[in-house]
Image (cartoon, rainbow over all chains, first blue to last red; front, side, top):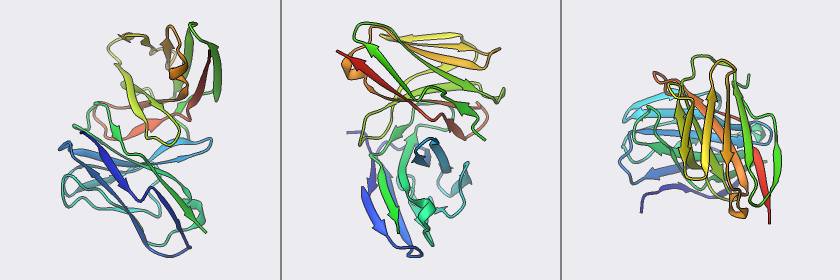
Length: 113
Length: 112
C-alpha cells in the first residue's frame, strides 16, 4: 500500500529539548516536503526536498532543520523547540516537484510547553 | 503575506445541491492549482488540479474553474453528498518552482 508514515502521531515536549519527527514514504518519490497547519493560517510549507541531499526552505523554515540522506526518509528536526512551534505537522511526497498530486502523512500533533 | 486566500471559512449545503468553494491568489506567476480534501485526524488527500493553460477541469462530480484574469479559481461539487463534508484546501505553485502555497481552508458541511 502506498503511504507516507510519520512518527510520532502525538508529542508533548518542553521548550529547548531537541526532537525529531520522522517521515518515510514507500513510493520512491523524489519530492518530499513538510508543512505545518495552524488555525486561520492553513498549511504552510516549512522545507522541501527535490531529491537526496537536495533541500530548500519553504515559507516558514525558522527553527527547523531537515535532512535527506535517503530517498525514502525526510526527518524534521527541531533543535530547540519553542511554544510557537506548537502545531499540526504534515509530511508529503510526490513523484516529482512539478505539479503532481502530493500524498500526505497522517500528521503529527506537537505541543511545546 | 497570504498568497492564496480562501475567504469563506465555512459553507453549508443541502445534500444533492451544488457546493461552490472559492479561492483567490495574488501571485500572477502561479500556473498550476490543486484542491485537497481533509477529514479530521487525517492528512489531506488530492482531489483535482488544473493548469493555467486550461480554464476548466472535470473529474466526476468535481469541477475546477480557473479565471486567470481575476486570479480566481473555484471548485464545484455536484451533487453534494454527506461524505463530502470536510475541509477543502486550494494550493498553487509555479511550473518552474518547487514551493506550494496553500489557502486557509473552507470547511464544507453537507446536510442530509
